[in-house]
Length: 277
Ligand code: A2P
Image (cartoon, rainbow, N blue to C red; front, side):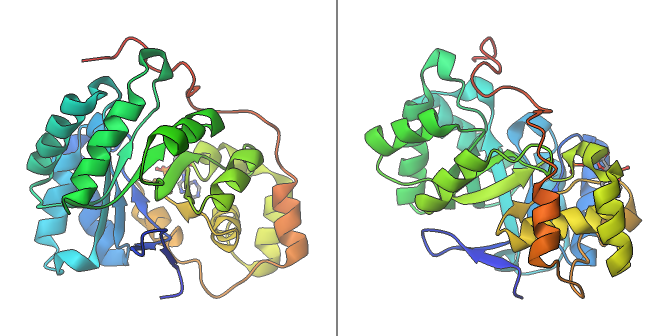
């Protein structure tokens, strides 16, 4: 499969993941089983999504060897701190019903409580003990990555950030590239809101694909890992079927031209200052 990226520690990650943010706990197992059936081999969840149990159940029910699936989960923002993060990882594995996660991320830096370096040290220990294949961050800005670079030992394997045509955080993605930190795009379709643009409609019609497929193809060609989410089986399939066409440099540039600087999600500098356990 050409849609695989090798992380800075040699671990391989499928570039197309299935995201389960906001998938209701009771629907998650079925949705993930469907995604695996379609061909997804990378599932992205988080303790905060309250659906890790469904993800793990689907992974176990798939009948695939565990090594053929890539499971990402994340430390809840209220569980920062060294001991707290160690405990949280054990609890996450219990909910997943798995012996290890492939990738464990700090979900948010939560800089106002100033504990993310301590949490990172816990993740480094879990990784050094061989209990997780890779560790990384989510929603980390340059200032947070700089601090981990100074005070930590392991360079994050990935940084998962809000990234879509209208909000690309180009300075941050460039910094990640320089440091060999893979970029994972969440809300890769701009929560669906980026898809109405006539520029995308025109490119899509030229290739006989949908605007969503153009956007996801743009991500793949720029080297991003994507985790589109959908609860609709046809769209889950369409978001995986991204072969058979390629965007030209001019088309890539047109999509890149859609930047407008509007963040849709929370601000990493302030999010969840009050959610500490
Ligand atoms: P739905 O779940 O009904 O498919 P993002 O991944 O950027 O957060 O975007 C997710 C949003 O985009 C959801 O509202 C989802 O709705 C919608 N969506 C996902 N895939 C597609 C697609 N292929 N075409 C149109 N809308 C999509």
